[in-house]
Amino acid sequence: FNFWLTGVKVSEFSIATTTQFYNPITRSWATDLLERMGLPTHILPEIVPSGTVLGGLLSYIRDDVGLKSTQVIAPTCHDTASAVAAVPARGKDWLYISSGTWSLMGVEIEKPVINERSLEMNFTNEGGYGGTIRFLKNIMGLWLVQESRRTWAKAGEDYSYPELTEMAAGAQPFKAFVDPDHKVFLPPGDMPTRIREFCLKTGQPAPQSKGEIIRCALESLALKYRWTMECLEELLDRQFEVIHVVGGGSRNELLCQFTADATGKMVLAGPSEATAIGNIMVQALAQGHVTSHQEAREVVRRSFELRCYEPGERAGWDEAYDRFLKIIEMEVDLDL
Picture 1: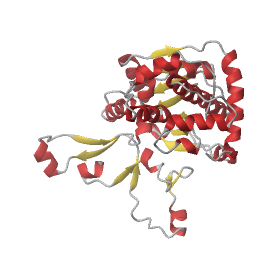
Picture 2 (picture 1 turned 45 degrees about the vertical axis):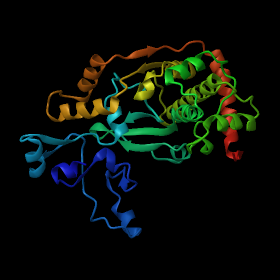
Picture 3 (picture 1 turned 90 degrees about the vertical axis):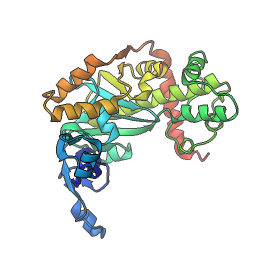
């Protein structure tokens, strides 16, 4: 999009790292590999850092909109990278979850982690602001809830998300779990039926009411967060104290509390519009309005309400996690 505004052909770092054309070790295009595959490499543009000033608008755009002196800045162009740039964190012992239809859970590090174990666990190394690496895992997020709501709405039962969350809060805890990342949940369609079938095929009681179905989805997601956190702690040989939840899912108070309870970590939720805020903060950094990324994060912290969720009683969640681990180990043998 920056090209259509300026005519400048570049690829911003966070976008380049997600193309599968990028070598995270050399921090350049993987031209040797691409040439061996017979792919043209001359079309690949220069990779520029987040916050690069690209110049003014093309003349016909400038004249049409009347923005004579506007400078176009390449922000952290990948949406999740922009959201992570806005995480209002302090120190280094924190994880993030960019929570929405998908959940992207990871950590900000200096160098990529590339080994057989990270490959087996399906973690990725993607670029972030300041040349950092977002070492993360893609997890199915609130898609299960969204598709359940859509299914009920088609049947004439149109509930709001707060109404569904309230139903879930009143439902029986720990009745049954699903692996949110199982392939059966990926297509759109009748999600409540698939959740019930998954539970039955894994030897669990099927959730019946709408509240039970939503609670099953939210508890399962929180338990998958714990599994992902433990994978990160193993791969990086370090412990984390805080989980920052940003994006639209940060508004789901029940999921945030479940996340704190399941992981045993303090959860700080907000801001919900982190991607847009990260874009703004990178532009502010590029223009010198703030002097460091940490200062930008402090600006975000002071500008938006953060909700804190402390972990509660762990015993029930620990037992639930043991059951959940058995469920996801069974996933390989399921063909729903």
